[in-house]
Image (cartoon, rainbow, N blue to C red; front, side, top):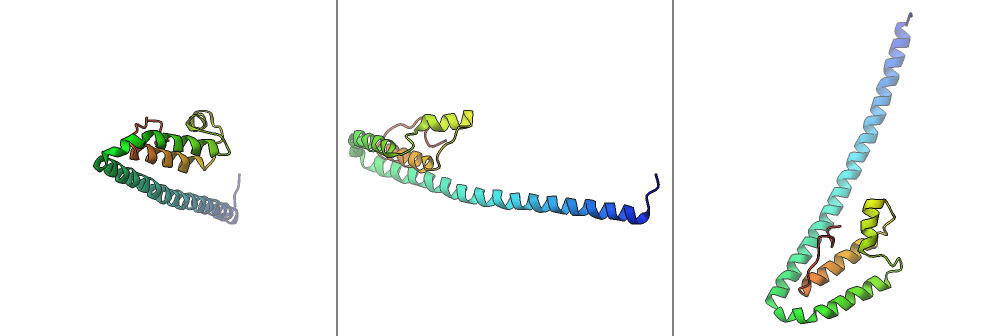
Length: 130
């Protein structure tokens, strides 16, 4: 097989452009992943800060424990008012079975976890860790 120099350079040039295109795609994904990491890190940090604040407040105000049933009712109402009628089980099914989980579930779970901590309730490992 006889390949001319021009053909060889043409193939080489084509290969380089394909590699550069793939590097561009890789860089785009790196930027998107970095941005997602920053946003989700800020959300997670804010959530952790909220838990710390409400726990500290509850420790200095032990009477709040008596309002735990009211907090529980508020959480039930929030979940009942959710149009998708989904709860923690829906999130667990989404993780294990690939089912759709509405985005509004994240703030709902976070708010209910903060309320539970604020009034002295216990949140299991499937709480806001989801």
